[in-house]
Length: 229
Length: 411
Ligand SMILES: Nc1ncnc2c1ncn2[C@@H]1O[C@H](COP(=O)(O)OP(=O)(O)OP(=O)(O)O)[C@@H](O)[C@H]1O
Ligand SMILES: [Mg+2]
Image (cartoon, rainbow over all chains, first blue to last red; front, top):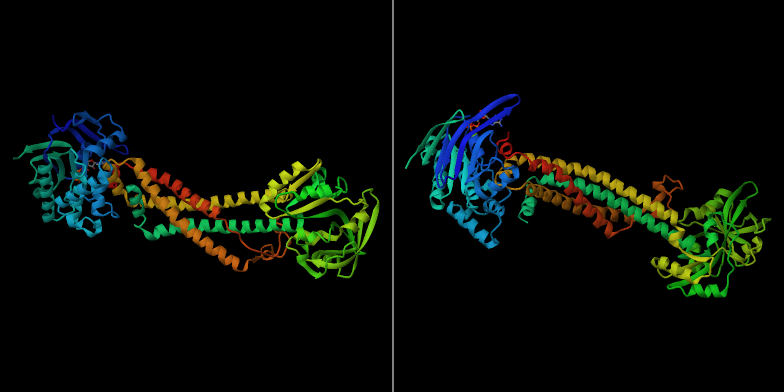
């Protein structure tokens, strides 16, 4: 059984009286443990697609099956529950909370599913921070970290709940190419170690090289879907 | 707890904004604390004036007299007796008692006539219950059984009397016949109770009884207790032992109209507080909206992570509560400083009332001092926090309901 199955997915944005089709019939399946990139020109619908998969937005037509359950009929509250327990997000601009330390930013995410004791939580956060290479920066605030370090914190925040799926919309767009590669390296490492499914979007051909599956979309449709091993 | 901690950390993001918003609340609290302190001071002093100069702690009267007492009737008077006095003395906390006879007088200086209140006082006993003689500004108290009188310096000035002058007091006896007392003015007083200064003439009880032909009767006994707070229960208890139609009334009964007025004033103070805090609430709303707008991406992230609207609202409420606490502490400190400064010299009430005699209905004059009440500090502190938190709910809900996609991508 695939982790995600999209059938005939369509999204039409309403801009005043004009209808803007962003996705025009997407069919795809993502297996658990895949490391997939979605690429395509600007305005092709990458962000829209990731938002649909990430249960952040609702489709106009078609079906999304997540982990065997259709999420089409869920209301906002139920979608939030799905995100809370199953999904991790990495954003282009990190979206860390500036008044919290790196440690607390990661802790924040696990607090939401609070099933750990204080001690467990602390150990978990620390060991993950060490794994993303920030063990000695746990008590720094975001403004004391570089862009790459911030994105590492964000990756740790996405992974701390051990989600089934991590979605990253252009995670390296704000980073230089060397740092981008480091971040991708880290994501790939985590994918292999924890078997977490990753889907990320990008423009950057260098970044695409890390993916084991490349899905290209153009004009709201999949134009290429290729697996590499 | 984590969210509350985060909320407090959020307060450090824009320290100046936090402080300014808190200051608005502090200012509201300062005004309330000052107003309330002043009212409390005036209330306490007014009650003191009523107790020390007008009613004592308890009054024993015929209940039919009590109803008409404002008209100073000579009906339903009481006959003093040793048994009655023995009964009164048994009251818990009893210190002293005295007899008084009040009556209507037309005071005449040969040209003008002025209606005033005459009070016959038991000269050996009166100063054990009342403090009138402490306020003599000229001359002395009357001799017992004489036709010497004292009056307020203000009244004397109004009627052009000096000590040593004779004042003609026109009175009507119990049988409605006219009589006069030629009172020699031997003293003038100036009490902090304005109506006493303006319209009361005091003379020996026996002289009053004689000219009014009351045959030894008095209008009431006034009783002093060791503790004014016992007066209410003491009055009730004593009433059960008295034979009808006699009844004991506490100073609170005597000051009923003042008590009502103070309750009204209290409501006014609350309304003022509510209005100012509403303004402060606008400040809170503004702050929450600004914060939410600045943190849109974070809010989007929080929603993407599956944080409930409720949790986001709590975080903002926690922030607002924090502002309320800071404002409350600043406001109370400012209030205490303000009251202390005020109480160094007090304030001459005539400067507030522009020299007039009207003291907003309070029976007091001279220098007034503000009172303190911890309970009202606590009240306004908590009230400020509650208002802050309530004010934050609406903008916080607005922020929490933002669509996550729109919040993340600023759409
Ligand atoms: N909220 C919206 N309202 C109207 N149109 C929208 C909205 N969001 C996206 N679109 C349109 O939908 C299409 C797909 O947008 P989307 O953001 O998914 O593209 P993208 O591939 O992520 O582009 P980029 O590489 O620039 O991020 C575009 O034409 C865009 O203008
Ligand atoms: Mg995009």
